[in-house]
Image (cartoon, rainbow, N blue to C red):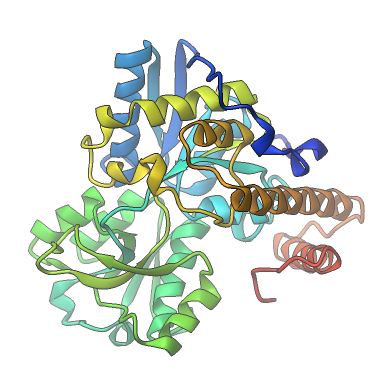
Amino acid sequence: MMRRLIDSVPAALATLSLLAIAPALADEVKLPPSMAITAYDTGTAGFNITVGVGKMMKDKHGTDVRVLPAGNDVARLAPLRAKRASMSAMGSGSYFAQEGVFEFGVKEWGPQALQLVLSSVDCNGASLGVARDTGVTEIKQLRGKRVGFVVGSPALNQNSLAVLAFGDLKQSDVKVVEFSSYGAMWKGLVNNDVDAAFATTITGPAKEAETSPRGIIWPPLPHNDKAGWERVQKVGSFFFRHMATCGAGISKDKPIELGNYPYPIFVVYASLPTDEVYSITKAMITGYDAYKDSAPGASGLAADRQTKNWVIPVHPGAAKALKEAGHWTADQETHNNGLLKRQQVLAAAWADYGKTNPPSDDKAYLDGWMKARAAALAKANMPNGFDQ
């Protein structure tokens, strides 16, 4: 069993005044000789973008970057936690890991102090891709259909549920088919083992599905459907309305009203030294032109396109680099410090829960933790984010 290790946020981070960092003298980029970065499966948008970033680091800084594909969020974070990788190109699973929910609400994990480097929002959307031969054109028509889930990937599964909620559907309204990885799930769609799977519209597997005999469509999430969007955001608070103009079967001439959130989301642990994260971030900012066209979605990593005041704090090293680039504000600093404080509260709640002799049964353990988590956040006057 993987040894238990809980990364916590140093108390000083919550009150760190990032604006006090003097921008006049920018530090040099000092990357290590080699780096490992985890990502989604080979061929996915996150993997391809990370390869482009890695090539830039090799060409400009002489750093050898290994991109490690992993089929679920737990597998993507395990090398970071074990200090065998520095950074991960995650999805919304980074939020679930921070919160210590779903697959991260087990005794081997708990809340993870993940912090942002850079993230991408581009022309793509993120939703359920549906095999065209099903005849489905609206989300509500997925009732009774087969929907792919990935074992150990709360991000993909919860995202699927959020999109289903738009059509007023719950997990019990569809036939869940579980797969071992994201790539296997999409192979399942092509092979007619499943009817719908969650992805960003620019992912390689969706392109493969588009050219397969089954084809692919993205049932729209009309932006004027207020009730539908309220249901989406109740399940996935990190989703926002987004007009998708690129991806499998999508173009500027044939846009689709969908939802989105930053992806990939490059994250590190809070414990990674500030100087190291600063150099990684600055390398990605200054080397942007070298990788922005390397893969669909890479252009969304531009410093001036970063999602502000999201649900995960920016690492102080990354904030320093963004400030030097002219893309950090007092409002962001205030919001960021609040998120750093949240990570402290979650870490303390997890430690306290471990002292209560919690049950060994996984479900009972998770149920007890979610109650303890809710109580700690309420005491700190912070939103829960997850209904009990």
